[in-house]
Image (cartoon, rainbow, N blue to C red; front, side):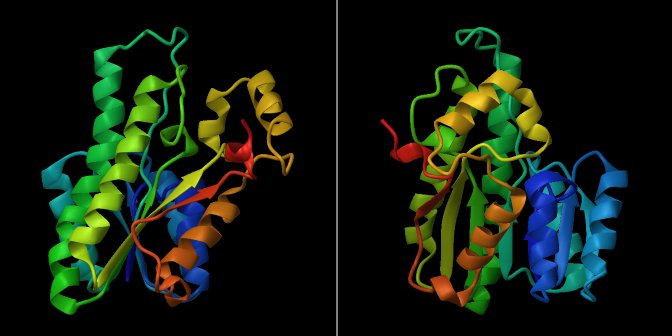
Length: 243
C-alpha cells in the first residue's frame, strides 16, 4: 500500500491516480479540502483499487500518528510513501523574512516530510522492505534570494532524505524528486511574466506537468530503480544545466 501526503490536488493528486493505474492501494492524505480529496478518491477508485481519504496535518506529530494508524487499519501495511505536502510563499521583498510565514513553510515542508517517514520506518524495517520518495524542488539546489524560506525548506528535504537513506539501508530506499516549475495551482503564485521567463530559460521550452513528476515517482518506487538510494532526481526540463 502507498500513502501520498497532500494528495487532494496538484502533483499529489496525479501521483495518487498514476499509482492506482499501476494497481496500488492508495491512502490519500489531505489537510483541509475534503471536497477535493473526495474527487481524487473517486478518480483513484475508478481504476479498481482500494483507496481511502484521511485528514491530517502532516506538520503535527499527533495527527501524523493518527494518519499512519488509520491508513494501515483500512488498507494494510505502508510499504510505499510519497511525502508531497508542501506550501510556497513568494514575498514581495526578498528580505521580508516574516517569522510566522517562515515557521509555516518549515513546519509543512520539513516537519511534514520527517514525521510521516519517522512513523513508517519501524514497520518497514520489521518487514525488511520500504520505498520512500520525497518531493523537493530545484529551489533547494541553488540560490533563490526571492524565496529564501521556501528554498531553505526544500534544501532541508534533500539533506534529510540523503542522510536518512544511509541510516535505513539496505532494506529501505529513500530518494528525492526536485521538480522545476510545474503547471499546478502553486504555479499561480508566479506572474505571467515570470512564467514566460522561466520557459524561455528552460531548454525544453515548457513548464512541467504533474504527470512528469508522477512518472518519476513511480520509477523511484519501483524495482526498476533498485540500485538507487539517497539521490535527488531533477525534473525541470534541463533548466539547472544553464549557468
